[in-house]
Amino acid sequence: MIRLENLTKIYSTGVVGRRGIVAVDSVSFKIKIGEIVSLVGESGSGKTTIGKLILRLIKPTSGKIYFLDREISSYKPLEYYRNVQGVFQDPFSSFNPIYKVDRIFENVNRYLLNLPRSEFWGKVEESLKSVGLNPRDVLGKYPHQMSGGQLQRTLIARALVIGAKFLVADEIISMLDASTRVDVLNILGDLRDSIGLGILFVTHDLSLGYYISDTTVIMYRGSVVEMGDTEKVFKNPVHPYTKMLLEAVPTFKKKWEPSKEMFKIESGSLIFRGGCKYYSRCPFRRDVCKEFDGNLSEVEENHWAACALFGR
Ligand SMILES: Nc1ncnc2c1ncn2[C@@H]1O[C@H](COP(=O)(O)OP(=O)(O)O)[C@@H](O)[C@H]1O
Ligand SMILES: [Mg+2]
Image (cartoon, rainbow, N blue to C red; front, side, top):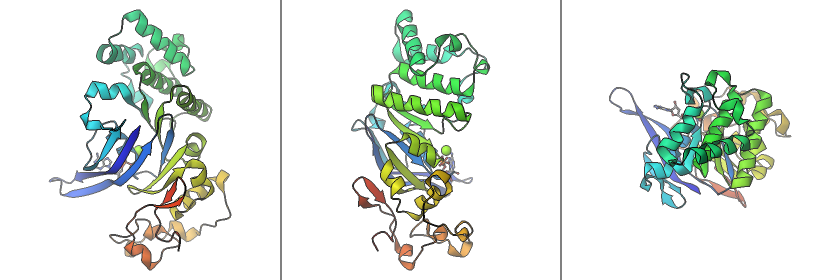
């Protein structure tokens, strides 16, 4: 459904834009119809940038994104946004506090759908119900009268009213309280199963990725270090970064022992250009890692990792 091919985004910074930040570095993966892919990595690893590129909010420096085998830039905006929608971390920022919540739906009909009023509002009510909301708790209300969880669900319902086939969900539950989080996660799972919604679930929380996704993509400093079937990545992690992340999640504790020094070895002398990006933090680093090209190799069916030491 969505395919990223050697996607790269370099932000220019500084007054004359001479310095570049490589936010996304030649990333390739795909998301099938009715599949949830979680994009996992610590803050600054390039997850949101990938989401913004898919939503055409920014342009890639190089590389391509395809939606249903057509490059996304070839779609007219309305055609594209009827299919591909995003929900973000802070639901309050998606609503204008001076208008009733109804307005986000009114705009959908005005700009995207142009349906007769009764048909349209019927659709809105149906979509609100499908995300577990009572339309009476939403329509006619102001954003401040609703909880973060209700607003996030309302935004998911909006994407459903539009008829979106693909959703970028960027840290959508990190601002919600624990009980609501699971509900919103389950709603995403239900939509995948019932209407075949494809979802890119962006999260810095590995356990959420495990709970919800079919496929997991682990990013480190703009690059994919490991990806594949969620079960395989979690049960048989290969990359030292993935192992370290898993070690940090108590429920996934394994025999593998992280050394305390792992978190401290980021020192200037160990940072160099080229080679494995994880070199300076890696407890297993060796000289071959300095020559590593960063390419993924197949660990097993539907499981890849980018580690110079894999298979050695
Ligand atoms: N608009 C921007 N201008 C310059 N640098 C940016 C911009 N947006 C993000 N970055 C940088 O790009 C990198 C990746 O950021 P981001 O995609 O937001 O990561 P994540 O969502 O994983 O935290 C970071 O180093 C961040 O500082
Ligand atoms: Mg982010």
